[in-house]
Image 1: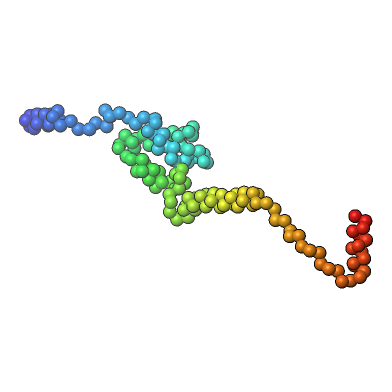
Image 2: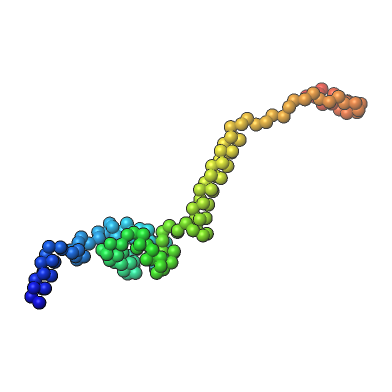
Length: 154
């Protein structure tokens, strides 16, 4: 029995295990880097890293705990998505109808650029002048006399 305890103590001394309490705890910057990608569950459209509510403080503490356990950013975000849904993410995942969020703004920008380029080309073009044509010969004697009188007065 004493020999077994001695073997265990020597084994612990020779092969130190990871002690979570002795490692450096995650910094506020590491926590905020993940919290920046999540939204507050209470306030609408407020990132988790700047929200002062108690719920957000608890979420940041949860992030800190998960980081201390060795979780990655993706694992932590997935944890919150499983708990609260996609609405907690700052950027919606690109699947289903969420593709519209990624496609509509660039398409609208390109359409706007095309309209602007077309308008600028139209502004640079000189206005179209009507062609000067010969006056038709007037066969009606009454109209011919009116034309002559108008020319004489002018």
